[in-house]
Every structure is written in C-alpha cells, then in structure tokens.
Image (cartoon, rainbow, N blue to C red; front, side):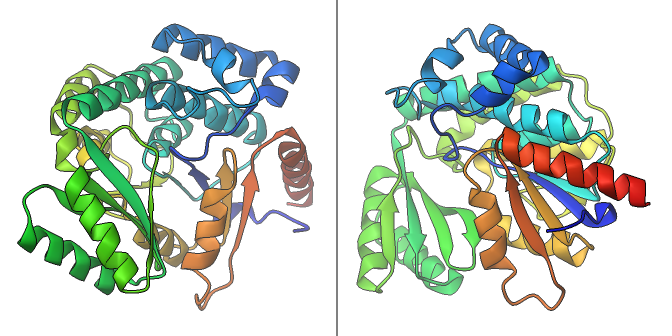
Length: 325
C-alpha cells in the first residue's frame, strides 16, 4: 500500500489465541513507555508476564490469567506507538480485544483497562475450574449447517451449547459443556465439516461464565467510563456505540454473549471503513477480514501492525499522508 486514506481507517484489536513468543518485546526494549506498560500490567495482575512471553515456548503462555493482561499490553503498545497522526473512523476488538479498543477510543484509562482484563482472566480461569466446559472451532460449514448441529445436540442431550464466535462465513466457534461440544464435533465431521477442539480452560462466551461475568460486572461498575472518541463496534450487536452508559452495559455482559465478528466487520465496511489496521500479533483478524469481505462491492484493504518494523512503515505512511493533506 502506498498511502493511508485516514478518514476510512478502522482499527481492530485481536483477542485470545493471538499470543506468540516474544510478542511486544522489540517495542518494549526500544521504547521506554512500552516497557512501562508491561511493568504496569505485571503490577495489576501480580504475574511475571515478561518471564512467560519473552521466552521461546513457556507452558503458561496459553493460560488465560497471563494471556489477557499480556496481549492487552501488546495491543495498546502497538496502538500508542503507531497512532500519532492517525485518524480513524471506527474501532473494534475481538472478545478480549474489545478492552484494547475501549482504551484506544478513550473510554477507559490504562490502569482501568489493565485491572479489568487482569480480573477477567482470573475469573474466567476460576470459572473453568468450577464448571468445566469446552470450545471447538468449526470450519467448512456455513452458519445454517452449524445452527442445525447445535439444535440437534440441544434436543438430544442436556448441557449448554451455543455458537460463541461467528468469525467468518465459514468459521465458527462452539462453546458449552464438554459432552455437548464433543457430540457437536462428531456431527460437524459427519457433515464433512472440520471441528478442532481448542486449548482453553473453560466455555467462554457461554452461560457457563455467568458467575464470573457477574463478578466482573461489579468491578466494571466501579470504573470511570467516558464517551468514546470514535465509533466503537461491539461484538454482541455488531453495531457502533459512543455513549459511556451503553458501552458499560454491553461490557457488563460481554463474557456470556456471542462474538458476532462477521457482522461487525461487514457493518464497519458498510459504514465507510475501507482500510482495516490490526494492532496486535499474528494477523488473525487481518485474514478474517479478507474472508468476510471477499465478495464486497466496495474495495477494502486489511493489514496487520504486529511489530516495530510494521509500525515504522505505517508511521512513515501516516506522516506522508499528513504532509500531502
């Protein structure tokens, strides 16, 4: 891409599953403010995050207690380093990434964001221990087929089961009780789909998280919420919001609501976003945007901003665009 069209930019932030070894390390070792983010996250969580994520393969890397504050630090660090001079039309985050979007949009302060995601990670881990659940990714089936599988399992056996993530038109995540998810995987495979169990500690974005969700909501009620500086599109509704009251209401229930990412990206694009910038590791959302919008009538571009090299390219393009305007 040769230039940035700033009025049409949408910033998106990834969630759980985008962690990787050494994430955020290059920026933190170069920029003191990024290193300070890690220290503040370690203080908020009480966990040695850099020990876990700045090694080749640490066994705690996928532990949601560590992952949530660590990934948030990487997301907001990349945003803070790259965003000077960048005007965006809208923001969104995938699941955990919604908290990064709220920080970037000025809804929550840094310490409030870090306290929320640290508690969220701990509560979700504890919920998984109290009420064991499972999650599985489903590929190669459309939404109608996946809904039919869910309905069949619900009719045949007790236990919770729902579509937790609508990631792309052909990628979904099921969440619920262990037996229900296992049976759903069998039925998906029988329909020539592909079902992949996910290495998670609980049934996230399902009613099995209700107790944890209620406790987190009490913490969120104590935070200071501000109106968003730009439109923030939310997972639960795939619609934009700006008012602090509405945003807090959505986030109070986020842990038990589905992630409607396909509809969200389509809505952002329909509202004029033509360039999606993903601030975070791996580029999962960048690839999803390509799958979601591959048949869109209006052109679009999606690109990841996941390390210092990509940030430097983006900053240079921002400065060139500002000079040109």
